[in-house]
Image 1 (cartoon, rainbow, N blue to C red):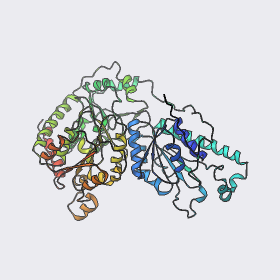
Image 2: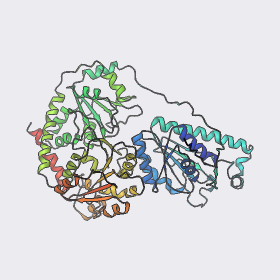
Image 3: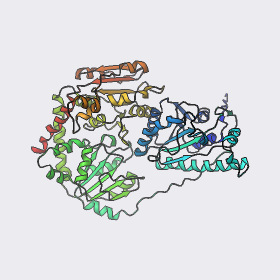
Image 4: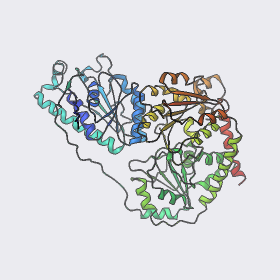
Length: 597
């Protein structure tokens, strides 16, 4: 058997070697590199080591979301690294999303030496602590003095006045290792983005065949777990409440035991409201929250209806909630108790948080629901009758409406192959998806941390690389065109699919209060346009399909998911001026369920 020896190369800069070594110590294997010169020492270290999987993404904003997609799937830190200057600022949107979605990405920004900042040198900004409001940990490493010593002596000789060079370098190495340990511990244990800013002096491209720094041992983790152990009082409260509402937002697939979910679903005193992003399923769950809440808002006696729905206990777990209507309802009709279950943090979304259970849902339910007897209650029965009514009316309504966003979403979601990963863009896309029941085999994701339209395509492409099943992205036109540089890479799988709903503008603004038909509204809010994706697909070598009718859509879906040698994009064109009326009329239509119950 032939043995293959890999001759590795290392950057000649000690700090770069140290950073690469810490990534290996903490098992960080995926590196997203935006090409540049100042980060060359890191690029050399990562790309020359077969331990790492390196990806080249030119646009830093896309790179940040691409890395976020990988981290989303693996639930482990992913590195992004860039050159100095404004390149770093383009990561900010992804950093904020990672911060609020609890996704660990590690930003390694190469910087100019401190003595070259604010002196008129090119491609320099104040990079240290630039993400300070949306970062788990931020550090500015110290510059090595054994590298480019002639420049250190010329520009910062005071660094070497107090001690010999070797002593100063040893102090620098100790400082840098301590900072990196804290940064990586935060990223790994707290699922937060961290930022490491590292100054490099030229030369940047020199390589060594042997590391110049000694091997570093991984320190013991300082992670501490805090979880309540006495559930007796909370069990009493739970067992005595006849109206319990469980609300679940963003939740990773296959993370909650179905046994616990079924226990909640079969409890007559419990209503479980789930969002598309919750990845939770049971026939007794309520998956279309707005179909329940929006019609009540239109009733003359809405207050009485909301008081009937108002829970004694609100139990939440998972990430952020899409539905603005459920948030408005629970802020107005507050529960007596709001419990949130999460091992790291709890948002007081409804301004009535009473307890944070610092544990994972399985741990919580295993103790809360142990030996629980169901309490007699008509809470579920009464509202389930309403649910079945509006679900029946929804099917009838969709059959009779003309081709539009609502009908196109209904068709598109219905044709999704089982087991696929579904990535949703924000704004109208995720909200339309909320209206329909999805097959339980689908794994659904959406960037709900900041709910921005930026980065949805980049995230989906990054996520697709580590999905065992094919990925389909459903996106709106503004979100897609805004992130069109996401297609500028070599990592699109041939089975990657994009469904682009093009209603010639920001259709959601026609639904929101304050809409008016005026040139200024169309230009500055709706952003009316006449763009299509045909030529983008030609440039990036995607197969392109376009439809504008129900029949056309049915014909396309007969072969849209078949195997091909290239990714595919389907552009669905819908009537800009009709979509909002059909959606708003839908809520009027199903409100008769309440009137005629």
